[in-house]
Amino acid sequence: MKHQPLQSITSLPPSPEEERRARMIKYTVMMAIRVACIFALLFAKGWWILVFAAGAVFLPYFAVIVANVGTSRAGGEVERPGGIVPLRPEPFEPEPDRDDETPEAER
Image (tube, rainbow, N blue to C red; front, side, top):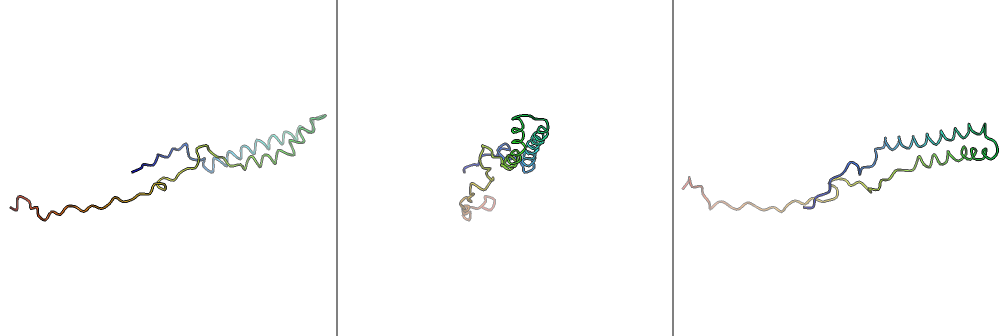
């Protein structure tokens, strides 16, 4: 019978809580950079105003895109144990007929 390879815990995708936490951290960092850009607009002069203004305007868009991108592992899809190899019962073999054999004690 063909045996299925054992499932490794490292091939499993991250739990929904871990994935949500990672996306929230990315979003928070990008929004913190945006707030810094807005604050820097108060003190910037010259062409730096355009750099900080672009950061303040476009960072929310990129933050949402980065936060909503799902993670994918290089390991591929996780296979369900037992769902891949169909199990077939072994053929039934009746026991040999023992009517002609009598125990020695009865002889």
